Length: 247
Image (cartoon, rainbow, N blue to C red; front, side, top):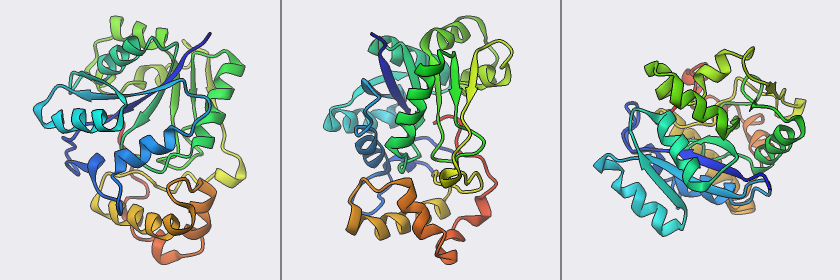
């Protein structure tokens, strides 16, 4: 039976916004909300936190224990090896890459992506390009990641897990999902890299939590963002900035 596991890449040493993954959104941290939402995914057989051995990430190990989530600690700079080793520990067949600074990931989008990966028997599936930043992910066969880890030593590839794979679609059976019209907002940004992003995410959470709790959908988010230009403009200065490729 194929085992599908999501790895959350997270560390405290972000250069642009240190400690962002444990930032408070309004009664819950970024990482806790992401984990809580991913646990709603029906297509995942497990979740593991992939963090570094740096002492500043000791607090993330404490967080993982309190959340009862599997954890692997590895190199801070060699994110590819860190993620590969995390999935070896989980005995994953399929690796779903999630960055820890995307607290609003919609479980429906993750499940849809996994279903399409399995249906197409591909090496890699990406939702990047038409989905908003912070609602996108990349899914890999673990064997492909291991091959990269064993044979490619370019620092850029070691830092950005899927860089080589996505740059060479001729070498891998690659599927790219185009977002349906209801989710096709590539100019939107729901990731956390800057203080303005945090203000934006907190404002959305404050609007949606009273009625939907922690399990609001991406459609719920769009409903309020598209109807409130002041909300949409909070992090507009970063709207063309790519989200974190590794954390």
